[in-house]
Amino acid sequence: MKELFLLVLAGAVLGSFSSLFEGKQVRDASFYMVYLLALALILKNFQSSGENLKAVITSLVAFMRILTPSYYLAAAGASSAVMFYQMLLLVILAVEKLLLALVLPMIHIYLLIALVNDLSGEEILSHMTELLETCVNGLLKSSLGVLVGMQMIRNLIAPALDSLRQMALWRTAEMIPGIGNAVNAVTELVAGSAVLIRNCFGVTAMLVLLAAGMVPAVQLLVSGLSFRLLAAAAQPVSDKRIAGCLAAAGKGYAMLLRLLLTVEVLFLLTIAILA
Image 1: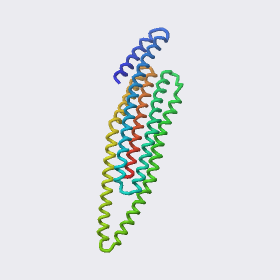
Image 2 (image 1 turned 60 degrees about the horizontal axis):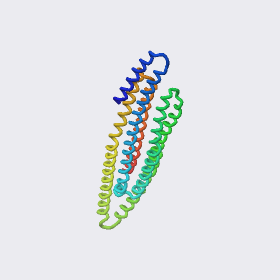
Image 3 (image 1 turned 30 degrees about the vertical axis):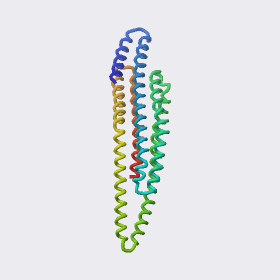
Image 4 (image 1 turned 180 degrees about the vertical axis):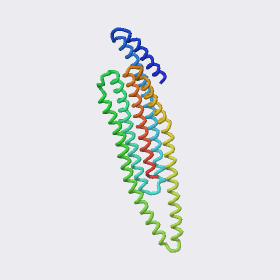
């Protein structure tokens, strides 16, 4: 950000001096020099942030894969456990194939096209950037809505089946002469302990997910806000194309943050619905 701030300042100074010369060659040369340097810095920083985000999401997916068999055993009901296992595999597949392989490259393409569009100064690619932004937001919302909707439907049905089975077992145990009450009390104690263990396991897993995503989320948020503030500061004194370039970078970081939050919400809701 310090280097970008110095570039914006240098661009403003060069723009003021170049206005003293006749013709546009000096002004255009100074602008393109500053703009291309700023573009290189932004793309380098954004690529690094994208790679870090991909590594974080990959580690979250690995954690969920390790969590699956443990939480599968801790689940109280067989139907709930089986459906949780299936839904978690579906969520992981969606994160890997849809979000990492499709949405993340689309965000990089969006930023590159936005920077080239600001370089031309004629808004020849503005509709393309709007289309990419709409596609990214639509895919994130759709993946969240479809998967959460499927989880809600299946996990509303599965606990009911498990409760009916447990109720049938309890009623059968109560009918045993002499030991029915004792068996019923022990069964309730075991079932209650299983639910408590399952819920504690789920809360611990959710806390781990939140802790793993907190630092990269704060980094993306601070980076996006920094670019937005720098664009606001550069607009009165610098070329509008440079301010637009910085604003586009800020919007790109906001899209990366939205991607990370979508992954977090998918995994958190997958655990929370069963717990």
